[in-house]
Image (tube, rainbow, N blue to C red; front, side):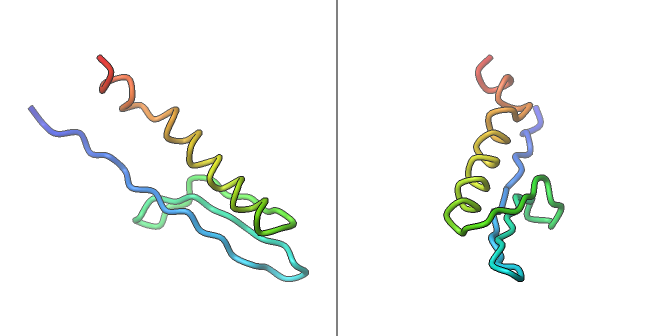
Length: 67
């Protein structure tokens, strides 16, 4: 039986011009899965963490683990 491969995600925050903050969630190979822009760092951090959480909730391997 083959072991399932679980993706590893990274979260990043970056300050842009004019005080805007961009956030992204990507896999370690560099492919961006979700991204966005917020006006403050706390808001960007919250959105990135929320996106990561929602991504993990909808992962296809969750149904295989609970079965």
